[in-house]
Amino acid sequence: MSGLELAVELRRGPLTVEAELAVAPGETVVLVGPSGAGKTTLLRAAAGLARPQRGRIRIGGRDVFDAQAGLDLPPWRRRAGVVFQDYALFPHLSVRGNVLYGLRRLPDAARRCEEWLEALGIAALADRRPGQLSGGQQQRVALARAAATDSDVLLLDEPFGSLDPVTRRSVRSELRAFLQRAGRDRATLLVSHDYLDALTLGDRLAVLEEGRLTQVGSRDEVLVRPRTPFLAALTSHNVLEGEALPPEPGSDLRTVRVGRLEFHVAGAGELPCGPVFLAFGPHEVALLPHAGAISARNQFPAVVREVIPLPDRLRVLMDAGAPLMADVVRSAAADLGLAEGRSVVAAVKSTAIEVYR
Image 1 (cartoon, rainbow, N blue to C red):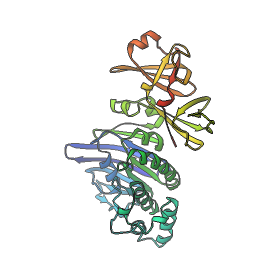
Image 2 (image 1 turned 90 degrees about the horizontal axis):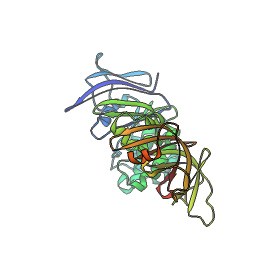
Image 3 (image 1 turned 180 degrees about the vertical axis):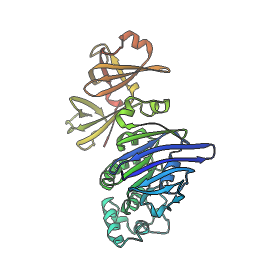
Image 4 (image 1 turned 45 degrees about the vertical axis):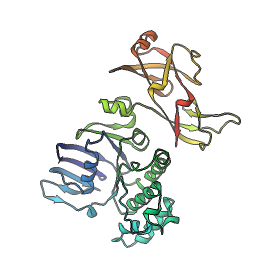
């Protein structure tokens, strides 16, 4: 296949990173894991900034590293666009100059530069320097520089790490749109530790722990079947895709339709209509024997599909017309008689749901 293929072993101090991973053209794989697991080391190996002791790396169907053959192409010959966590912009160059720097060997550099400045909404900032930009604007410059290159793979290292939570939310939506355009024919490997990045940006998730891949799969597979304590903690959120309906006059709630379900969400009055994500933790889901037992606005009949023991609680996987997870203590589970096939009502307060594009 083209895209990105790597099977490498790297030693960095006490940590040995040993991983085999393939990313197809047009696919985004989010590499997640705890701090110090080796995520950035693996990405740097793909970029040509860290040299493995063993293994092979292919980008765009050609070998760029082969330890046995003694092949190690420098970064500028790997056809990889890279966005670092700190963006690595040249402070003495303008926005336009930063984007053009990576294009200096291409005959159509000026056209490519202006195209991506316009696409990312920073054409009006072209003559400013990085020190005059916000964190979100600097990220757009770094993305433009990576996208404008004639690359087969995009490598993004913690792209929201330098942003505050409010900016991160809006820029995440912009990055999704960017990947849909820039990543259509390119493989994208994105390093993150944030579950929302993983679940909203990735076609697949690859989980790296202590230098080893512990799970690789679609976001739904990894969400429902976490294999390690870290992954269970990472995916401890219900994340649903739905459609925000027009606001109702005089109401402080917003309706989001997820399949046949309608969720009522507080604090989303200014959200545009259309596709959105809903997120809420399993601890926010109360299980009831019948509807009306509590005052939560969102109550849905559900069927228990599986009960998974965790160290201090039980995780209940349900089908409510959409997949839902709830965490309950063992005494409550016993009172409800929770078991596979049991009918319950899942309730979620409107204030407990985060909605975002």
